[in-house]
Length: 167
Image (cartoon, rainbow, N blue to C red; front, side, top):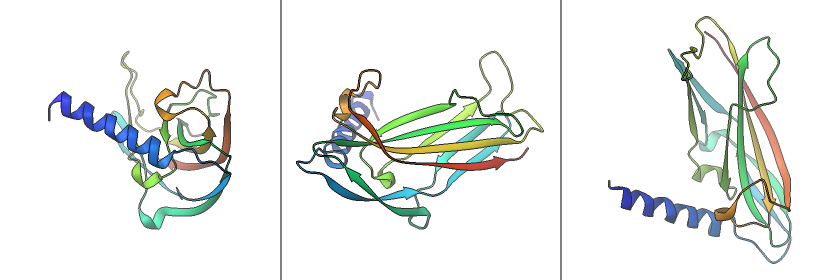
């Protein structure tokens, strides 16, 4: 697939997500959202992959009230730290997506050893992996999200999933 077609596909996908899933409405509304209740962690030598499970049996129904003329979005934040250590305030990673259709999102992050050669995950170390999911509303269209200057941003729902991953 050439870059031209990939770019076109990504642009089309962003437009679909922001105009269908995150379209502003004229009045306040209650949305029925299916949210993930599980995630997967796959550990191998030199890497750890984190995936949200969006299978039908792993989603729960949640009612969320959205304000008038607001656009919805989802934030994924994940934290990985050794068991027995305090969780750092700095997150391991994050991602923002327009809309609230978790099934439309494919999320995976692979954590690897860093550039200076520090091994990750360290052999013999058990890790805690936390995935914080947040549904929010804003008045800024998805294509213009720059979270340093959004005036109207409100958390509508949040939940943290947690797993212990052994050596």
